[in-house]
Length: 184
Image 1: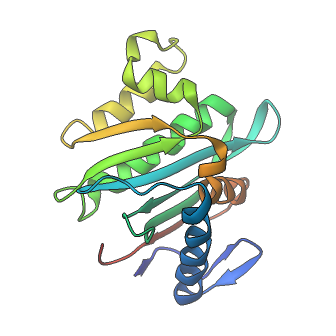
Image 2: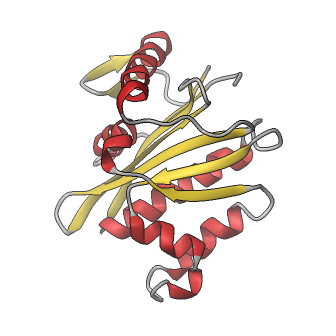
């Protein structure tokens, strides 16, 4: 596992990579039993979320790339600065796209992005419906993923627990958390 930030405060305290991976694995095993569905064969799933303090304020984004065994391959949590909730959701998708495209899995797997933002999903699928204020963000996501097979899907909040926790911890985060495993 590659660790961009050597030891990071996450979910209440610093975790080394072994403990962090075990935490994510335990969390996703619980989610798998109740709300999480594995991706199709030949596909990896990136659950993403963006959260904001208030209607416009400090925002955080987070996400977790998982294989069909619910193993975390990439996790991220970072500040998105001052923004609104819709922009935060799209920024989380953009970060997931960016991380996936540069990963070793981009040549082997299709990408499924799941988010609890119905608007973001609608605009990714139909960018001509997107209001002008959000269009640059949406188009940048589409541009990042132009050379891979991918799709985006709406998921209820109940199926997006870990991404939500990572996004919440991203609010005000001074250093970006990004963990990447070596194998799928």
